[in-house]
Amino acid sequence: AQKITQTQPGMFVQEKEAVTLDCTYDTSDPSYGLFWYKQPSSGEMIFLIYQGSYDQQNATEGRYSLNFQKARKSANLVISASQLGDSAMYFCAMREAVRFRSNQFYFGTGTSLTVIP
Amino acid sequence: NAGVTQTPKFQVLKTGQSMTLQCAQDMNHEYMSWYRQDPGMGLRLIHYSVGAGITDQGEVPNGYNVSRSTTEDFPLRLLSAAPSQTSVYFCASSPLGHHGYTFGSGTRLTVV
Image (cartoon, rainbow over all chains, first blue to last red; front, side):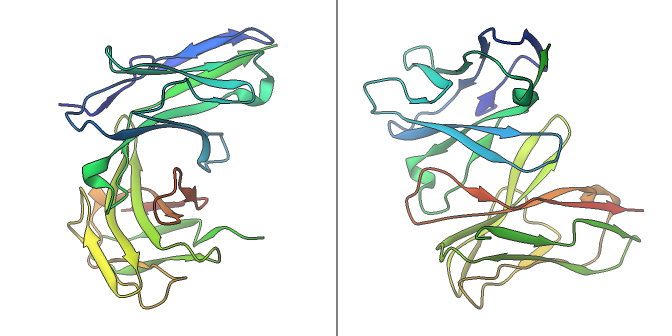
């Protein structure tokens, strides 16, 4: 079974609008972390936001917020006030506590976001 | 600038050739890892290291070797390149228990 599922291969959003990128995960480990990374066309991977499984509040980092619904096993990324520079691939990832030593992340297949002027 | 440096950025190999992808970080990170990125499959862990002299296999280790003689360097060796190893390779590092990786800029490898 896939550990991380991103069902939106591509998304379009109007500049200055908000957009939600979906991510669901699968784990039986009670302790885990959820991450979002951005990959611009230049290819580098940029860490955006982190949510721990025991965190009571949704994580926020500037215009990025993570809508964490533990019972649904979803960790959607919300980007507010989209900018042209937000056009990129976005990857959801998970690290389970049992994999803490290896620091192994499981990545989804990504969502390509295009911001329209 | 501090970060993770990968070389080369692009490489074309013939089937059966060997080569080493270089990775160096200057942040004194304990963890270093190699991932490969293939279309429609996300990133998958090849090998990782939790410190100098310690390495272990990830999800897709076959056909690759690693070593970690220093904290800074974590080279990835392709022993006998195959077309199935055509991919983009990322080196990543993090401090112990940190919440996110710092990634290198990637190496695009084509095996013909």
